Amino acid sequence: MTLFFISLLAMALVVFLLSIGVIFKKNGRFPSTHVGGNKAMQQRGISCHTSQHKEAQRHQTLAERLAASQD
Image (cartoon, rainbow, N blue to C red; front, side, top):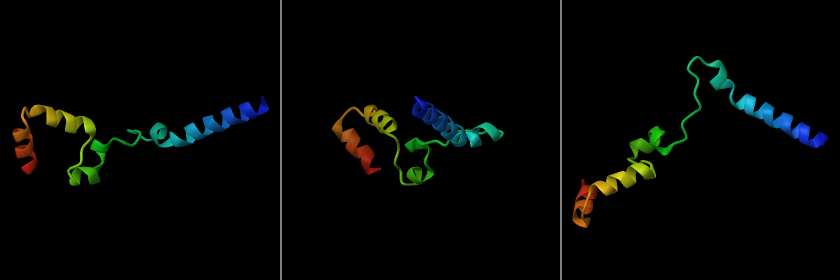
């Protein structure tokens, strides 16, 4: 039981230390880990799966999809 409480205390400490920037900064936020929020990925033209799926659904035929990929 002692090991459980030590582990629980350690986990609480880790969560607190990871959230210090969010808690104490004026407009603190957790960093975006989403592919769409990554500037390097945006420069390469890579987007998230959801965005790519929506783009694919806009085109009705294979010919339209191929024409769009040529642009």
